Amino acid sequence: MKTFEVIIIGRGVTGLSTAFHLAKSGIKKICLIAPPPTHADCSSLNAGYASITLHDNISRPVHGQGSETTRRLLDVNRAGFSGLLQFVQDQAINHSVGRVMRLASTPQEATEMRSAVQWLFKNGFPASLSVMGTHCKQHDGAAAASIDIFSVLTRLEAQSMAQVVNDTAQSIRCGKDGVTVTTAGGEKVHAEMVVAACHRGIKNLIPEIAPALVNHADQWMEFNIIEGNLPMARGDLTFAEHSHFWMTHTYRGTLVAGGARFLRPWAGLEAEESSILKLVTSTVKQKVEDLFNITLSDPTQTVGAIDIRACDEIPIIGPMYGDSRILLASGFMGSGLTLGYASGLGLSEFIQFGQSKLIPKVFHPTRLRSLTETD
Image 1 (cartoon, rainbow, N blue to C red):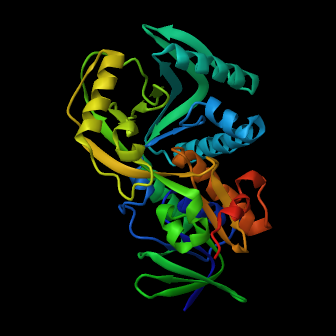
Image 2: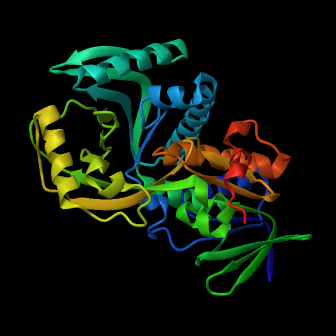
Image 3: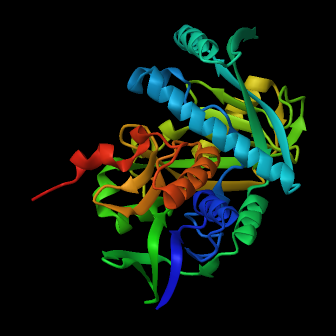
């Protein structure tokens, strides 16, 4: 049985960011356990946009969790975006930096936007409201970016210099001398600590946390712009109608758009796979064309993916209750690139120092201990 300092389960941005930051700190004996990056649970299915702000408008977390927790969430997201963008620039990875805009077509959403802008401005974002045709427009005062995600994953993995086991982790066993992970193929590896950053696989590996994680099915499409001028610079990210629709102008000059989960059974909640729905494709395409008075091609690619949220809509990042040698990160609510990159830095701090300056305790799994089912 091979022995390492750290085992990381997962080969998406969270796991690879953790490996990268550990390698920078001098920890070299790292094992990555995960299928190849084209696997359906990997960040390679990400639409390739990142932002300082969140997928949902800020009024939602403020209402649900309060201002202090929301500020901490934005601080972590900001750190993730800044670190990811710095990595992308240092590695000369293709990207474009833009801005975030939200569009409202009803008086009710416009009222929500006014409250959101007041909160954002008060907390350090130069947010503002304006009118675009029949829509109210909210500028979040935040940066966004379109990024070549495959190159990010490739470069992070290369610089981590980790040993890769191309298999799925099947079980984690903690003993007095450390942690042993067994793969589906029967291989066993041992380390002092393990990081579970394997998306939906966390539910099987750590059943205690499963009741807190909720799957959401989503779908995104990439289009060419056939006619008209898109009023978005490359790198810009736009949300519309309470974030039911989202779209980004990519560094390649194409448009990637998705959403319309309300067309799915149970709005995509608890789906085990994200099927490609023609109605979602046509609805999203029509919405973008109507918003911007442009004509789009048929999709050049269509991707279905599963997003995961925690039941209280706060990311779960930190040591597992019951055994602090198991660290985990999940529940990123559509902000996987930024929160994933930040989680890697935070988890590397836990491994080195036993605590993290970046990840607040409100994110730790301990808050979910009461969800564990007992006989």
